[in-house]
Length: 312
Image (cartoon, rainbow, N blue to C red; front, top):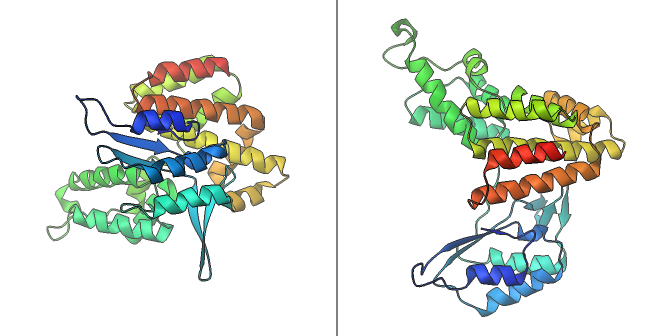
């Protein structure tokens, strides 16, 4: 993996060049190239890939900051900033994007709307031999948004729970519908109290408590990947809220503009007030590096997070 937001052409070249005799074909992921602040890199990368062929390697450009804004019949490629707003791509970046978009396997992975997510939940539940009420599917969406990875696991949990009930709860040989009350009982929402407690401890400079809470998450069986996703997501929210607060937005405006659940927004506002914008940017930058090192096998996540908590 190459952290495109920081890499220059020299590093990209070294990663994508033909492999050794022991490894003729490799897969290289270049992540978030459009977040790179070095403006010359876009022309250099475009020129580099236009002039060379890489049949020996699989090269994937993956970028979370790019979206398509549709106004009437007009489509515009935009870059999503930390506040969630989309701004048109500068000319040099747009040229690189257009080149990549024309490649054979270019694909946009668009997030599902709430309605599409609820429909997906119902279809997946039925495919796995279960049934779920419309309201229950909507309850899952209200708790987890469009996080299909977590929803996928929760569907299995709910079906297994329903199948394990007393026979009298089964109708006509088919599982009774999963109901909202069962979702509320079993599904851990994305605004997990444990994550809020952890960021509360960090914002209050209570390092010992932050380390203790992190250890408890591991004892519960949560994985490095899940914890990193939750912590990074929470600090992204705090950064967006801090920017909104600095712009003078009210709580109601923050909920509306950032499209946050009121519970998440209020918790986040209380925490964001304990950080400056610069500190939040620094923390998020360090978390991104830990995440990158985790995915490339270069770091022990628990140790790295504990060191980060001590430094804050």
